[in-house]
Image 1 (cartoon, rainbow, N blue to C red):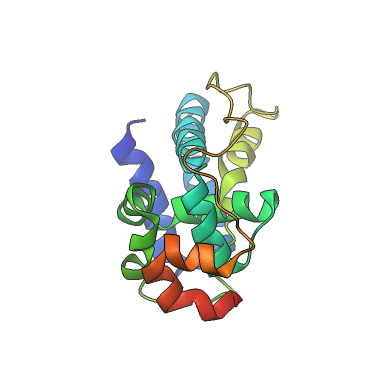
Image 2 (cartoon, rainbow, N blue to C red; image 1 turned 90 degrees about the vertical axis):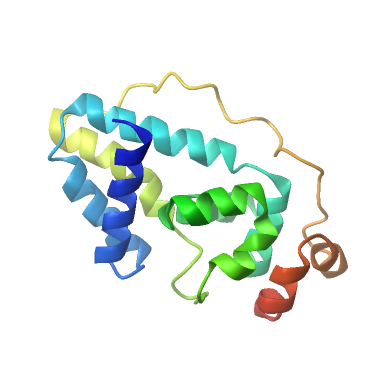
Length: 175
C-alpha cells in the first residue's frame, strides 16, 4: 500500500462518517478487512509513522487549545484525530500547527479532537483477518520527548504567543 492508498482509506471513511471519529474508525476497519494482512500492516505503518511525526511540542500546544488535552493520552488521541482529518489538514498542521485555525472549518469539542479509535483500526482489522495480534511494525519507536522547542502547556500567554491564530479562534474553548 502506498501513501495515496493510505490517505484514500482515511478520507473515504471520514467522509462516510460525516467527521465522527468513532464511526470513521469502524468504517476503516470494514475497508481494511477487505485487504490482505500485509496491506493492513502497510496501512498500520503509514498511520504509525504519521502518529510519530506529529509528536511535536507545537502540535501539543494546538491540542491543548482545541481540546484541553494536556496529558499524554489526550495528545495521543488528538494525533490520531489529526491523521483522521486527512492529508491536507495533517500535513498543514505538522508544517505549521497555527495553520489549523484556517484548516478547520469548525471544531466541536464534544466530537472533534479525540480519534483514539482510529489508532486501533489496523490492529482490529489484522486480528479479524488472521486471528492473531499484529506483529511489531519494525518502525523506530516514538522519541522520548516531543520534537521542537518545549512549551509551557499550562500557560495561556505562552500558547497565545506561539499559536496566535489558533488562540484567537479557539483559545476561548479552553481558557
